Amino acid sequence: MILSFENVSFSYNKHSILKNASFTMDSNEFLYLIGPSGSGKTTVIKLIYMDLMPQSGVVAIGEFNSQFMKERYIPMLRRKLGIIFQDFRLLTDRTVEENLSFVLHSINSPKKEIKKKIFNALSLVGLTHKRNAYPNELSGGEQQRIVIARAIINDPILILADEPTGNLDPDTSNQIMEILKDINARGTAVLVATHNYELVKKFPSNVLQIKNEQITGVKINSDLPFQLPQ
Image (cartoon, rainbow, N blue to C red; front, side, top):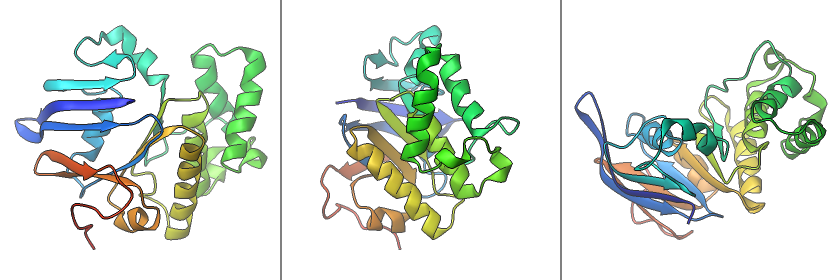
């Protein structure tokens, strides 16, 4: 098991988002977290990378535990995670290669490994030919693929993807999902928060649903215990 939510509660300004919510995730799992906008998907993601802390309950990722987490250890946790944001968050004044090398320099990766890791990450997302381009020279789908390359470049134990296809057309969304599925097939756990239920149907996997402050779901790749919204 790579991730555990145990009786987690969280509120914004006295508005309850999660109440005694629990789920687990295995180390090689591909898992969807679904629910409408505002249901708490991003809150769950932020609790995992500890941008937020549970007001009760425990979040545990690998050897890191929210109950005992000191602020100085949070960067160490995040080095073990790959985070994919809907709004890309690329450095616009740096090339693709410089965006990726920035991540590796920040964690003091050996210089001899940096170029190799950049090449491998760009190869996986099919964009080695764009390494000298700036973000504004890329399409939305290409930018998201660079974000995925950035997320995987340090061999994370878990990829967190928060609405990774939210700003993309259907064909490009399919390409992004195929890349994420490929990453998972190579052994990395992937958690995708989405309200795009068509993608869930097209690329089926284990599903969790946020509803009424609870997280419910099933750990099988078959019939769900709830109906996906149309």
